[in-house]
Amino acid sequence: MKTITNSDITRFERYLWEEERSAATLDKYLRDVNMFHKWLNGRSFDKESVLKYKAELLENYAVASVNSMLSSLNSFFAFLEWHELRVKTVKVQRQIFASRDKELTKAEYERLLLAAKEKGNERLWLLMQTICSAGIRVSELRHITVEAVWCGRAEITCKGKRRMVFLPNQLCQMLMRYIKAEKIKSGSVFITKNGKPLDRSNIWSDMKKLCKAANVSRNKVFPHNLRHLFARTYYSLQKDIVRLADILGHSSVNTTRIYTMESGEIHRRQIQKLGLLRC
Image (cartoon, rainbow, N blue to C red; front, side, top):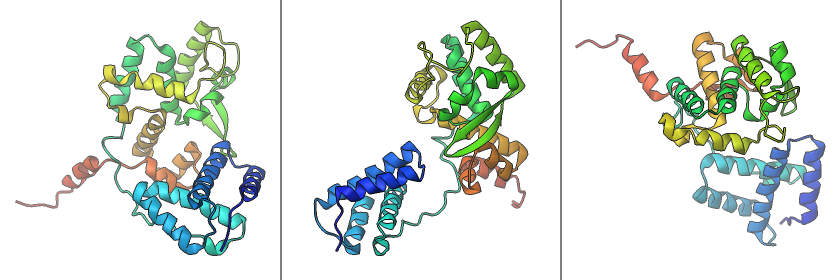
């Protein structure tokens, strides 16, 4: 039987920090471990206890969330060299098609742009086009600086990796006009009135305010969906998933495949064109 102490968790936190895990990853791992620790309520435990915990998670959370929590716990057990306590994640069949109620279409994207322009929010209008045309994460928006716009490319560091992102010429011209009008001398282009880079939550909120005017479901409107639209559009034209993975900064092509999934309706139209039926 094993017992978790606060010292164990503190040492695990130190280990994650020394491994240079991102702040978000560190926070998530600790949250998941502390959740298990709270569930134990001071009790000693064994593999059977962990399996019982897994079963309770499956009753209350989606499979993907459960697997994520178990992955955190397995890392904690591995750190403590309690390898016999590690449990298997739940196997899930790979999703083939994207959900239509969450997939942002190009037409909907254009309606969002029009709504932003009609509201007079030029910053949001340009911000959405920057994310969508460059395929960047919202957290990478701060790397779109005055200097990057002038040279047409931005050097982005994210998740311990560095990559070069090229900005379309037309986008650079639009951003240059904005920079000049806003008298931004250097640093990030998309900033608050206090000169700080825009916060993710502010961008999320501003985009949601466009939904009604653009007649687009709120479920589809969030910054990362613009990156997905870039990926699907690029892949539909180039059919080069390896190059796309490099552009998006993915370590695995399997991650990129999630971005390029088409809706079932598109697949239905494609198979109907095969000409394999005779009446």
